[in-house]
Length: 56
Image (cartoon, rainbow, N blue to C red; front, side, top):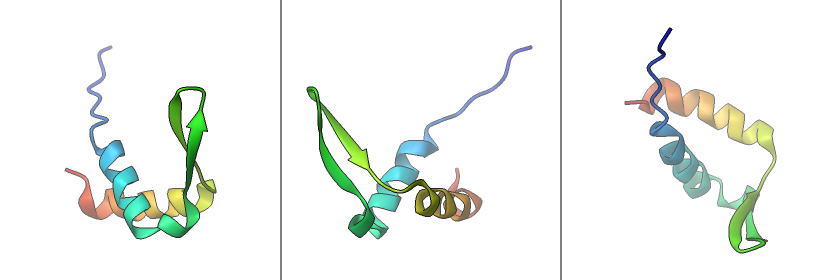
């Protein structure tokens, strides 16, 4: 069974979360990459609302 998967909205949701909740996101380096540290509950609550209203 082939599943149609479209994950393009996840980066947009993350950008919107960081824009609206910059106070709860900490950025830093892990090795040579950039990482973000944040509590998951605010992100999940935001994502539920965001996907219901903004998903393409």
